[in-house]
Image 1 (cartoon, helix red, strand yellow):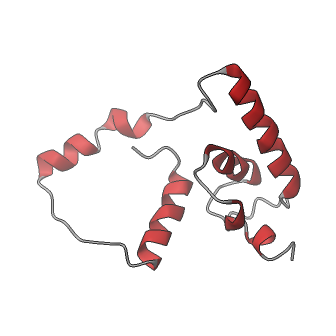
Image 2 (cartoon, rainbow, N blue to C red):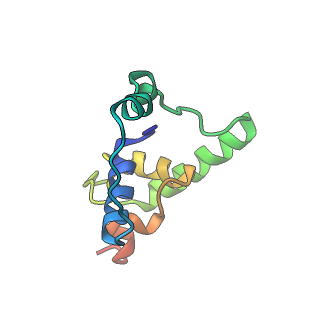
Length: 106
C-alpha cells in the first residue's frame, strides 16, 4: 500500500541509490492481488490513535513548519512544506531531507 506517493518516490530513490534493488518476476495473479484498486486508495489520515498523541504530533508539526522555508520547492519529495512536516512527524521522512535545513538555511 502506498500511503503517500511523494514519500514512496523518496524511498524508491534511496533504495536505487544504495543498490538495494533486486529484480523478481511475479505471476499476474500475485501482482493483481497486491495492487488491487481498494489497496491503492487507502490513505491514513490520522496522526495517532488517541487524541492526546495527535495533538502533540500536530504541535510538533507546526514547530517543524516554522523551521521550513515555506517555498514548497518539492526538493524533499513532498509537494509542500506542510506535507513534508507531516511526513516527518509520522516518521516517514527525516528533517534532513529538506535541502534548506540540510544546507544550513542556504
